[in-house]
Amino acid sequence: MDTEHNCFCELAPLYALDLLNEQEKAWVEQQVAECPDLAEELSGYQSAVTALPYSVPALSMAENLKERLLTGLNLEVPSSDPISPPVSPAYVAIRSQDLNWQPHPTPGVMVAIVHRDEVKREIVGFLRAEPGVRYPWHRHAAIEEIFMLEGDLVIEDEVYGAGDYIRSSSGSSHAPYTNHGCRFFFHTSIDDEYPELPANTAVSNPLTE
Image (cartoon, rainbow, N blue to C red; front, side, top):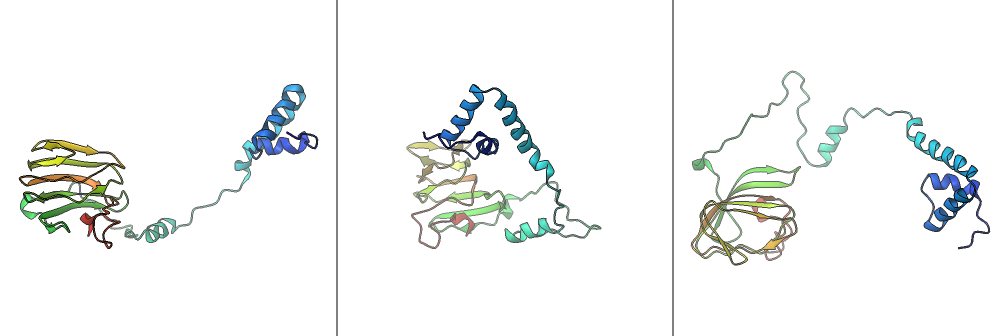
């Protein structure tokens, strides 16, 4: 390393700001080790760097920052009426007979979505499949949870039935199928990928269509 033109007084402030490469850092540390008096000088620079954030005037947050963020994410902006703010229900219940079953792009499959969260990018619902149905191969963008209610579901040669719980990790993939038909509860990501499906749905979860 060429140290002929190095100057401690120039490199020490940059060291304190962590702006030096490894060779320059090593040179500064060597100077401090050889001359303990320089350690006090370097400590002064480091103390000054630590105080920098507190020397900047505090800025107040824009009053409409939350609304701008929600608008940018295409999310609903809550009412600003201080007299009657929106009230979230303590719980949501959907009777089995009231489930809104919709056809899935895969023939023989129906889904009923009961909850969708665009912020957490998750979707919750029920799926039922007729005998012999193979679900499209897909890759999980996040953890997927399945709770079997009836019938059979085959995943990687393992057969699961009523009462079984299946948890797939983020990044995993499979193409489950059923021999005799099945029905299960699921909690998965909106961003799961389905390469086998047509181009218009290949990069999105068909459950969201």
